[in-house]
Image 1 (tube, rainbow, N blue to C red):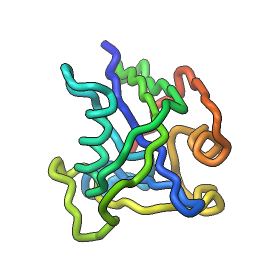
Image 2 (cartoon, helix red, strand yellow; image 1 turned 120 degrees about the vertical axis):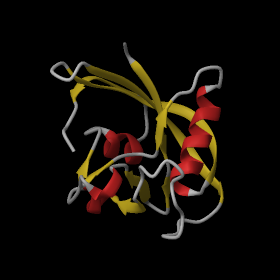
Image 3 (cartoon, helix red, strand yellow; image 1 turned 60 degrees about the vertical axis):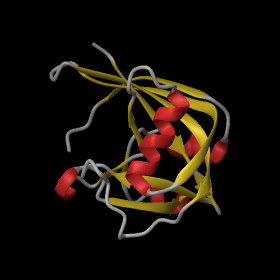
Image 4 (tube, rainbow, N blue to C red; image 1 turned 45 degrees about the vertical axis):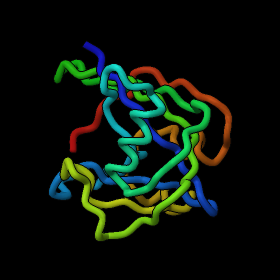
Length: 145
């Protein structure tokens, strides 16, 4: 079964918002905020809910900009992430915010130069975030935490 997820591409002041979504800081991998889609709710509503849970930010959801497939044949995992360009409408990042699902442990904005020094997935995210356009990335191998 393929899992569907949504993710937000939020660029403010030349910086991209990323989260570390590994409980207990068990990985240094960063990704765009978002998560699995709940049935009977639109992709936009799912994304707004996920971003709020993970960051405390209220967003407006714009156009899709990236579709990325993560998979691990060995683990029987296949996920399709649909990324949308989004804008922060309310709220501020704060260390006091707690993800109710206790998954996201860090959140921050990164410049493009800073992205080169961190573990980040998907690989195409910086080009999409800072370069515009739309991209499809099929079957990127899932990394272990």
